[in-house]
Image (cartoon, rainbow, N blue to C red; front, side, top):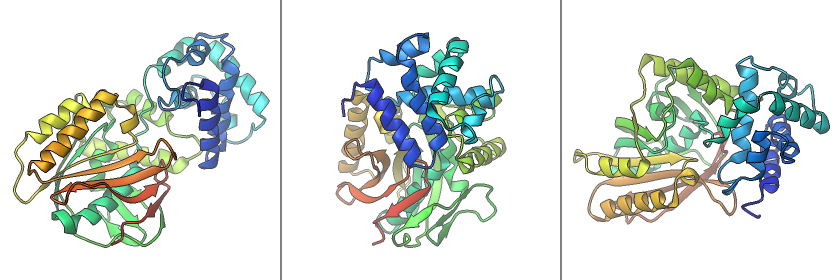
Length: 346
C-alpha cells in the first residue's frame, strides 16, 4: 500500500468497515472518493492530505462529521443510508457531495484531529491480560491509561465481563462486556485494582452533552450495541467521573513512574488503538522510560492492544518486570471489541 495515497486509504477503510459489520458506514466512507475533485474546502483538504492518510485515520475523521449531522439533527438525510434504506453507491456519493457542499464549514473542523472512539469493548482484552498477569506479578495493580480520551476505559474496574465464561467485575454494572470468545477462556485469577487514572492531550468530558455527542458520532451508526455502551459509560461517569489528566503521554509516563508505589502493587500502563496517533518521538520516549524503569527494578507491566501496521490485526501484547520484559502476544481482537481470539490461557 502507498501510505500517502488518499484514494487508496479511503477504499481500504471502506472495505475494512464493510468486513467488520458496518456496510452502511462503508458506503459513507467510500463516498469520500467523490470529494477528491476538490469542489469543496473539505474535499480539497482531504485530497491534499500532507501525512499518512490511513495511519492518520483520515477517512474516519470526516465520517464522524457526517454522522454528527444526523445525530445532532442538523441534517438527517444520511439516516436513510445508516438505516440501510439507501444502498446504491452512486446515490450515496451524490448525497455526500451535496452534504459537504452545504455544510463545508461545519465539516472542516472534523479533519483537525483523529477520531476519539473510546470503545469500552476493548477493555475485555485489557481485563483478560490482567487475569494472565495476576499469577505472574501479584494481583494488585495501579492502572494508568495512555490516550484515555473520555476515560471510558479508565472506568473498566466498574464493568461486568464475560470472557468466554470467565466472569469478572460487579454483577450489577450497567456496562456488560461479553465479546465473542475464540479459544479457551482466560484462567480465573484475583485482580485488585488499587487505583486507576488516565491521560489525554484533549480529554473529553462525558458530562458535557456536546462532547458526549461528538464521541458518539465516531461510532459506526449501525453498530447499535456500541452506542449503548457509550450511554452506559455516560451513566457511570455521571455517578463518579474517571480520573483524567490533560497532558502529553510522554510527560505523564515520566510523572507516573516517579510517583510512590506500594511494595505489593504492580504499576501498569495500558492503551488501546492509541500508539499509531502518537508522534514517533513520543513513542520512543515512552518505550525508553518504561523499559528503563522495569530494568531498574520497578514493578511494572505494560498492556498494548494496538494495530500491527503490516497485518492490520489488533494484537494484545504484554510485557512485565520482573519477568524480563519480553513482549508476549496474548491474542488478537476486533477493533471495537466484538470478539477476542485468546492465545494466553497458560
